[in-house]
Length: 136
Image 1 (cartoon, helix red, strand yellow):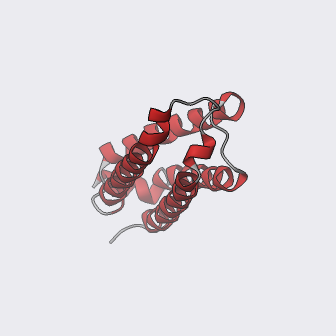
Image 2 (spheres, helix red, strand yellow):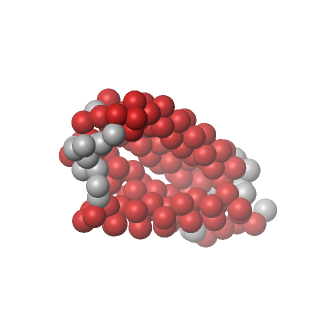
Image 3 (cartoon, helix red, strand yellow):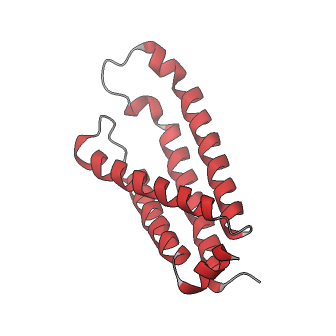
């Protein structure tokens, strides 16, 4: 039986994935408007493909991590999640003041909520009952 921390982790992580997808779809719909002025036409033409590919790959990675952490108790997947979380926080902090692309307020808020949820997920993975889950 899975510990309560892992059950809560799974629920929050799914919520985070949904928020991330919502922010991505919202941004995807306004992608060409977000490019800097004078962007080459090739960049505008490639944007839907690159963004769509990024959304699909990101979703696949998140679902794999969710499965291996919440259902298999993989220590490796746990640390991959932690590393990706730290990189995400670093990117968020860097993007606050130096971003080339300025997202609308909605996707920015959804992304911030997603990062907060991921932080709670990291905390849940290191609770005592979750530590036993990963050691089994």
